[in-house]
Length: 316
Image 1 (cartoon, rainbow, N blue to C red):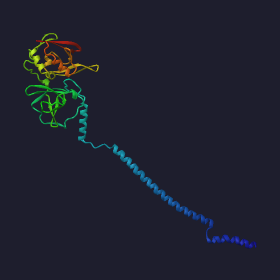
Image 2: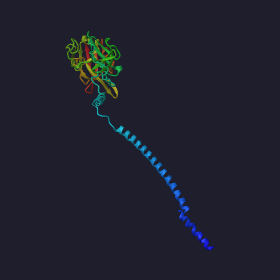
Image 3: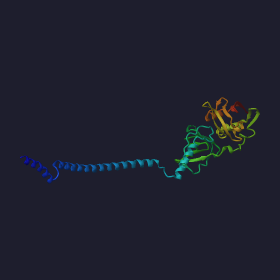
Image 4: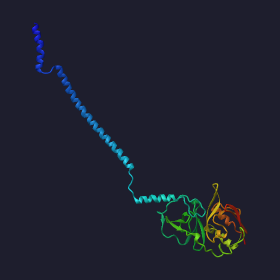
């Protein structure tokens, strides 16, 4: 009996060894094969996702590099563009410079009119002899017609029927004709020295009889008062500012043998008052001069060399 049982215990492993691997080992092997198959699938999936992520990162980096490159790239040099930039800078740099303003008003903003200005010859029936270049409300131009008549016009008014005064600058004006601007320049009035007969500069016009005392020919003075625009064409004046307030005008230029020269005025004199009329703007200055009709005595209050003084004129 014991011998039979021992034979059975020995025969079972032997039979199994003759057939192959132990059943437990076979199950493990099957499980490992299945796990190996799933691992390969996961590896393929991970590799695919990694490749897609890498491609996305590369596209993102490309967009960033392209954007930075566009911002950093400067346009190719163009002489024409650079010339335009220099012209604009030059124009703006000289915008604050005022030239030959008869009564020194601020000229405001300068604007280029090159594209709109008609280069055809200006009207020949009159000539520009004086300007007051300031803001549009205080800008005037003085013209002389062929018959010798002188007249002052402000912006917006028709100039002898030839066109509307559109813009006034110190040495030229622009008249609008048929939606175009015609430029009229003014010759340098300070180069003109020949006085008219019996007018300013003639021996009979003004005589000095003492220090600061003069005698004025009544007939010559009447001629000036009949043509008050000559007052503004014989000199260039700028405002005299004291403590942010204007007090008269400073003589910057004087036409030789002109009215102001004949009256004994000098460059640098500050004109404060004529009789009881303060000289604070062009309108007041003209009113002061035209109010002299019928008077036999004129007193001109000025500042010369920092000191106030009075010039007295007797009209005979």
